[in-house]
Amino acid sequence: MAVAGIYPVGERGPQLSETESALLASLPDQARTSRPATHAELRTAIMQMAERQDYTLVIEMTETGFVAVVEGTLRVIANQRGTGEETFYCQGESDALLRQLAEEIARACGPQLLLPVDGDDGVLVVAS
Image 1 (cartoon, rainbow, N blue to C red):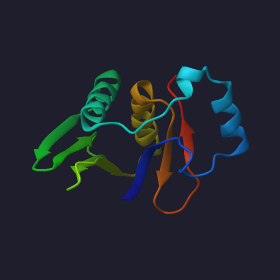
Image 2 (cartoon, rainbow, N blue to C red; image 1 turned 30 degrees about the vertical axis):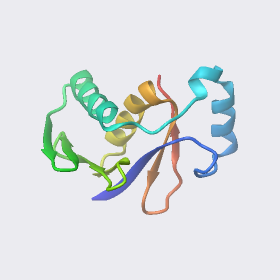
Image 3 (spheres, one colour; image 1 turned 180 degrees about the horizontal axis):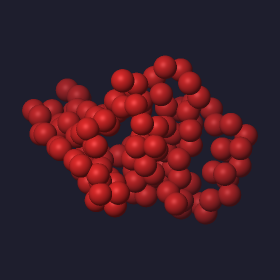
């Protein structure tokens, strides 16, 4: 099972390709703004994706966040660190599900980078 992260586009993040930079530059100023998703926004994005695509969804609350399983193959693990920072990561084999989730997050939080942990290149995802 591959591990991936979905991150906001920012100055401290990974470099965008020329094509991705051009795409980002072509967006209206407001659509270029990117920020991390809160757990509430993440949970909403997961539920909207599942509803939109008629996917099965199981969400289990934990002491520090939640675990969501979409279609039995995509796991989203959300945790709150001791500092209060809300973080999450994804485990799954389906690039399509990961991209759909990143797109749902981008609808609320602006452009996102989908980055696999295995070192492959990330993908810029904007809301369509």
